[in-house]
Image (cartoon, rainbow, N blue to C red; front, side, top):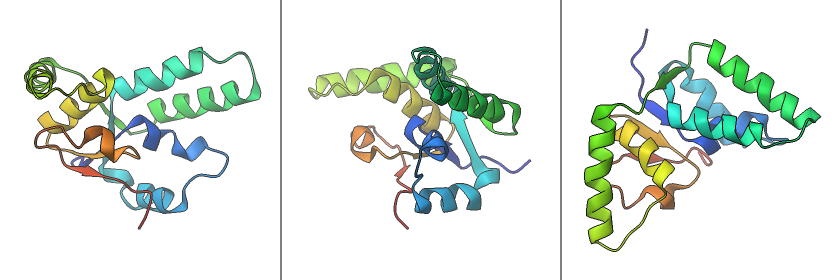
Length: 141
């Protein structure tokens, strides 16, 4: 198994099921498919979003996609003790600076940071204050 290099944020992992997915992002996903992973927090966010939907075609589509993802070889990294401690230290640093990043986003960032992965997101600005985090957006080539 090839080592993971990229950790996909929720907005990136959900892109393939959009009515018109971003073409550049889809090409990058295809090009790096063996080196991508995601976080357990992302799976939580996708599942939570799914569970909030009423029975519908959209819900069935998302549920099938999520089931397919989880049955695939996609690696899902947990929010473990190392990530929790790093997150706590970084959260305190940011609060001292008067910043309050998204709690879930910071958990995802902590997983990427402690595993030396590049966080791939459509919301680069949400993560720019996170110390030492390498971030990429695949929305443009």
